[in-house]
Image 1 (cartoon, helix red, strand yellow):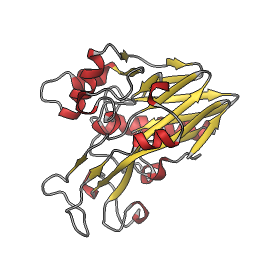
Image 2 (cartoon, one colour):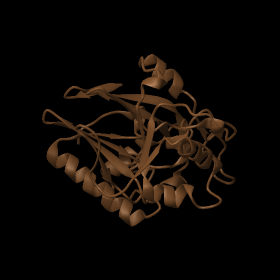
Image 3 (cartoon, helix red, strand yellow):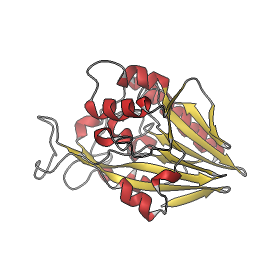
Image 4 (tube, helix red, strand yellow):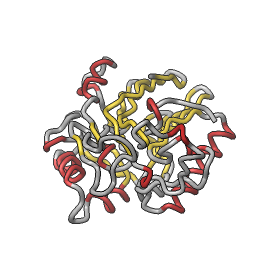
Length: 267
C-alpha cells in the first residue's frame, strides 16, 4: 500500500504480526469496540516499515520485528483458542523490500521512531548489519533510556550497538529536526521518552507517520484507551490528542505504525 505527497512516494512494508491480549490496552471496553478484536480474542497489530523515496533520497522508517518470533508472557494468552502459536512473528521485511524494488544498499537513512524491539529488529539481527550504507537516526532520549542501561533486552542492544560500532548511528534531540527536504522529525514523547513522528510536507500535502502515538483505531475516538507499553501514559495521551487534533484541523493524512494493513487515513 502506498501514497504520494507531492513528488515523495511513501509505501507501507509489512514485516509480521503481533497478537496483543486485552491486558495490553487499559481502558479498552471489548463491548464498546468489538471490531478491534480478532476471532482469537486478541488485537492483531502489524509490524513493519515505511519506505520513503523522493528528492534523491531513500529513507526507511522503522524496520519491524526482524527474523524472529516470541511467545506470550506467562499467564497472558489469547482470550479464545489455542495459546500455542507465537505472540509475535517477524521476518517479512526483506521480501517486502524486494517486491518494492528497493535493494538494501539503496537505503541511505533508516529513521527509527523509537527504539522498541518491534521497530528495530532488522538493524542488525545476530549482529549482522542489514543496511550497511544507511545512517541510523533515532532519539537520544531513547538510547539513554532503552539501550544504554544494563539489562536492556538483547534484541535492542545487539542491533543498535552493532550499528553504533560501525559508525552508522546519529542521535537527535529536541523538536523539528530536518531529516531531508520536506521531512521533519517532531518529538512526540509518552510512549517512550525519545519517540518521534515524521512530518512529510510537499505541495500543500501533508502526511504524519505517527509511529506508536496510537496502537489501535479505538484510540481515535476513545481517550480512555491506553497502551501497556507507554512509559508515561498521561504524556502519551496528551501527545496523542495533540497530533490527532492537528491532523483533523489541517486535513493531514496519518499513518499509525500498528493500524490494520499499516494504512493511510484522514480523520
